Length: 426
Image (cartoon, rainbow, N blue to C red; front, side, top):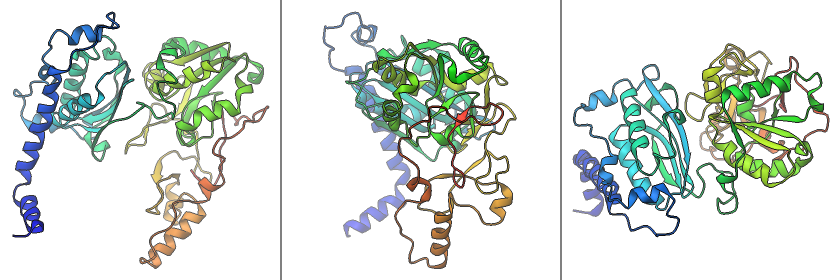
């Protein structure tokens, strides 16, 4: 029998056995954490190291699910009955690879999908599943000796969703738990800005908006997210950089440093994690009076102030695209200009950009992010053989990678904040 035939036979006849064995191996990898190498005696004040030297059985980090049937863990994973967790924890981790194996085993055991990033500087996760599964996941994370002195229940942001919100489970080890493009060795999370609770942040924004001329205020309300996030929802009066990736944020600060000189900066992002590193970078420049950040991000703010100063939807990085807390629509259809804030992927397969196109325009066939992409999609449909082309369209070609702000920025009507918006694309 040929090697190809053997592979085909195994794939078709023994798939369940292979999945079972794989799960067992992953679980065993997690259990090996209990035999983790002895930690160095330096930094004896670190409670994490003290915990691990007491021979904690890491197998206890995997919850006992024997009292639940698989159906109980899986049922309720739909967007109406299930739940999505968003959290992060900055703390020093000595063996990210073993933590990665444990997280993989944990999520598979609980039938969770989503993304978990692990690095020597901590962990960042967005996972979805049934409410039973997410509850067990939170309990495990809070009891784990690696995180129990750093994480609390309030650090987990929840929203309606489930395993269906993510195509798969992806757990990996990276240099950073949020990709800013600067090594944690050069810029530590430990030098971040001052954390403000949602209530404290609300009062600061209220004070900022009370200025008759906000350009002359000593405060800058800074959105640390990407342009397509702030486009569909933002704080009133904010400065929202027209950047596509958070890794462009340091260059944006460098290019527009004058905006922050002698200013009190109020920073915010989705869940707080980007502000940890972003505020540290801004502080390192030494030009601001003070740098503050919204603890828990927009997520936590909207839980307390759904009708506060944040208007529009909250963009999320999964197949829901956005969460709604109020009825305001602050963006518009890229083609006709009608109020619209529900993203779709560009209809041209090779393009992964998001587009705001209302039902009326979609009905007319306007389903791509721009005219160039629309033409490419039409040509591809007419000539399937010519399906490959460079993944670039006029949307990205004409957008500066890092914009320089105007000294007297134009504010959008109604005072919902300043966002540099280009028409004709998302």
